[in-house]
Length: 456
RNA sequence: GGUGGAGUGGCUGAGCGGCCCAAAGCAGCAGCCUGCAAAGCUGUAAAACCACGGGUUCAAAUCCCGUCUCCACCUCCA
Image 1 (tube, rainbow, N blue to C red):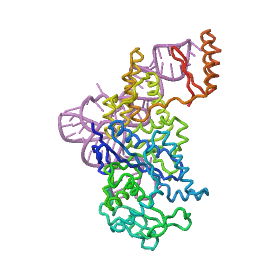
Image 2: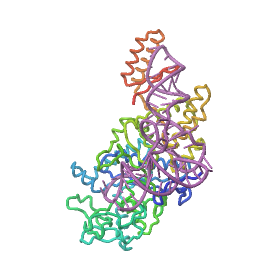
Image 3: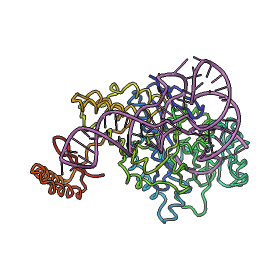
Image 4: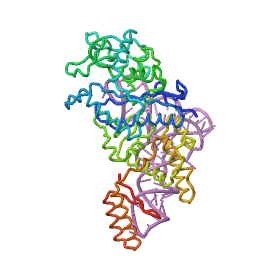
C-alpha cells in the first residue's frame, strides 16, 4: 500500500515515490545551537523521526535522515559574548544538550552536518550563483553578497507569494538592491571574533543562514533529493530562499516539502522571541521522555499542538495504559511489520495519521485485556501492539537497574507486610505500606503477589 | 495589504460526501479485584444541533457561498 504525504509546496496529498527505488534522502532543518532546546524543537525532531521510522519499518525503505546543525550565527556570537565564553564552546555544549534530548526521545538523525564544516561548499555555491547572474556583491563595497531575488522569476513559488507583496528588509540596508534580496555571505563585523570569519573572494565573513542548507543538502544528499522538512515557521523566508538559490544554481532540489505544525502555549506560538518557551527540564519533570514523545504524537503533525500540564498528564496516563498491557501480556514475538493491523497501516500511510494509529493501538489493548480477563490468550493482540509501538518508537524501555540494597530492603518489607496481612494485623500492614512508600517506591497488589517499581 | 491554517462531547483529538445518531485517550460514573486502599481491568452516561447563516446533493461534520472568531508566516525562530 502506498504512502501518501502532504507536500506543502503543491499543497496537496501526493503518493510518495523515491527518486532511487528503495532509498530515501530526507533533510530536516535542525537547530541553531544558540541556547537550550525547547518543546518546539522536540516536536519537529519527533515528527520526522516518525516519518523516517515508518518508511523503514512499514515500507522497507533505506532512509538517510539528515538534520543539520547551524553552529555559527549572529545569536551564537551574541550569546557567547554575553557570557564571556568562546562561541565555539557554546555551540558545542548547546549541541550536546540537543543530542541528549533527541536521544532520550528516540529521535536521533543519521547524519548531522555542521555549517562550519561546509564553508568551502558554501563559498563555491555563492561563486556559482554570482557567475550565473543570480547573486551580486554588495553595492556598498562590503564583503556582503546577496541573492538577486528579481533574477529568479519563480521566487515565491514555495509559499505562493508575489515579490510585490513581500515586505522584506529595508531597501538600503547593507548594500542590497532590493528589499527582498537576502544575504548569501555576510561581511565580518568589527566586534566579532576573528575565529568567526572565513576568507572568501569577497572578503572575510561567514555564510548567510539560507545558503548553508543549500550547500549541505547538495554535499550530502546531492542536487536532487526526496524530502525537505522543517518547522512551519521556516517556510518563509528560509525554505523559500533555499529553494530559490538552489534552483537558480541549477539543482532540481527537493521532490517533496513537509512542514510540521508549531507548538503553542495558550493558543500562542512558542518561540524564543516571545519568551514563552517551555524548557525540556520542565517538560521532563512531568513525565518520562516516552510520555513526552507520546504527547508530541497525540496530534497530527501538521496541526498546532497546544502545551499544557494536563496535556502531558493525559499522555502519561494513556501511555501507561498501553505499557501496562505490554507488561501484562508478555510475548516472545519480535516486532514485525507483518503483525501490524490493517487499520494502523492505513492510518500511517494517510499522511502519517498518528492520532488514528494510536487509536488502533488502544483498541487492541482493550481487546487484549478483555481476552486476558476471560482467561484466554492475548498473544495476537500483544504482538500487534508490540509491532505498532515499534513502528512509532514507543516501546517501553527495559527496566532500569535498581540498587541491590534498595531492592533487598523493599523485598523484605513486602514480605513483612504479606505476613502481617496474613495474620490480619492490618494496622501493621498499613504502616509497612507507608514505609515502602517513603522509599520512593510504588507497590501494586495483584491477586497472587505484590509487585513494586521505583517512582517516576 | 499578501499567503496559509483552524473552529468537532467536560478536556485532548481523529474523521474531510453514504460504513458517522462521529474513533481513540483523559477526566467522571458503575462494576470486578482488595482486609481497606492504591494500582489495574471491564463497562458506561450526557441534547457532540460537528463556529454561525444560506445552498448543492437521494445523502454533508465532510462540497459551495457568505459571516464571525482564533492562529501562523511576510524580521531571528522547529
